Image 1: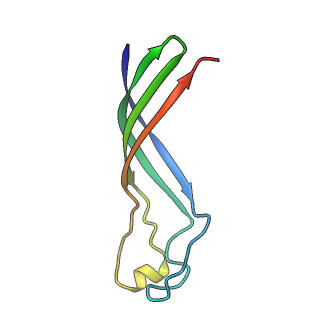
Image 2: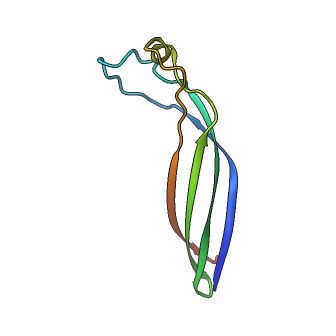
Length: 94
């Protein structure tokens, strides 16, 4: 049996580390917190009783300007993190 679904929500993220490229700017290139609106859909495929396989695709839309002071000093006014995700997984009954 196939069960399609839609998903939506907020995706907060925190910068844990940053490697520095001396030709770009200082370590304060990006802010330490970001959040995105995530939305998409997928399907769950029941393979057997108690076991299912799931695939989903998401688009993450950046809503916070993450540009730090060194990026804006270079003339960029905004930097927002956006992107696609493709996920797959398995579900087991317990």
